[in-house]
Image 1: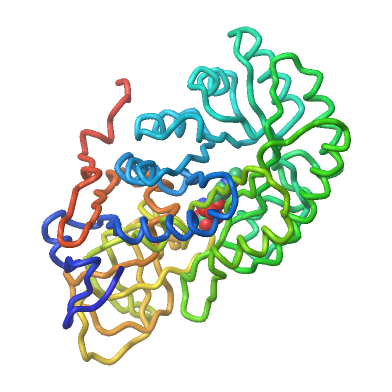
Image 2: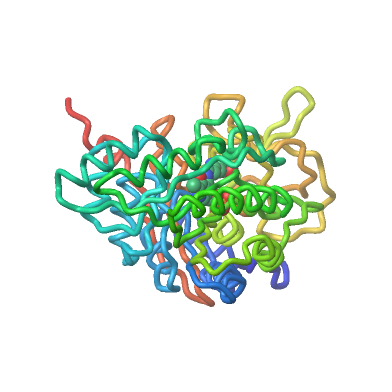
Length: 411
Ligand code: LLP
């Protein structure tokens, strides 16, 4: 929901320059109506089937964002005890919470069981043993799916492919039946379904379809052995258009292709994160200084890699837009942060109009894996977050102070 009104870039009905003045920079800014629209796409596409959408809250775990998403009827995909805590605080129904992760600790498992979450997505035999043991000790039953690694290749950054052979994720495809037969013998385990996740920022439907075909085959084999599966969890992973020229399939297209494969009557779970929140959130930053060095033009912003690490970590592209439109000619510009590393950049060699010192830039589509991956590196306090609805703004995270930097430190 970004658009220029006259020469001012606006989010919903509000000028971004006004937000910068009111809340300071750098600040994450989210559009509520965009979140609702993105979630609605999933809800509608799933409607021919039974099931629900679990928001992958690792993408953005701000309490107000989670609360708004839970109000839409979403469930949650969590990966830690901390995320369970956040989700319950945000009002998610525990019976719509699914818990994946290769390294769940005893404490996290016990907390999840006591929180009565819907199910664990179990990623190893040893994890299953531990869940069974803890459930027995506290006299509860644990509902589980196995996360099966379907061995599917997809075109995305190497760090975020999860469903190919040789990654740490899930149960190896060839061991799927063995895992279910093993789980069937466990006293405190209730088998509920099957799960897979192939990776993130995937822009084609093909790998999802291949994974679905493999999971369908596994389901048939498991059910042939007398084990009934109630849920099929298709994971998350649909990419978004960060850059001009990229084309993401629609959620409707993805699901209609998947439901040709999965023609059975099961309950379906999807765990999207990025495609719900990425293009609903942006990082608003100020140009502190400009300089030319070694023949290159630099804009130095008050946002750094500690605030948004995606360009540094994945060489990710985020479009950068000055919030005031001008007629100036475009020059090749490097937008960099203030941190003491050459890897601290937001965008390299971008054709941007001249922006003056003190001007504001919007680093777009940073709503997913932006704030949630930020840190206090270089002792930079965590930045503010603002939610916009029509012409109203709401501060949803205060900018941290220097004092906050010392929180929990013991001298
Ligand atoms: N479910 C599971 C089990 C996952 O591991 C993930 C993401 C999701 C769902 C959500 O996937 P999405 O719909 O957001 O693609 N930090 C990286 C992305 C890491 C993805 C990890 N898993 C980035 O900034 O690109």
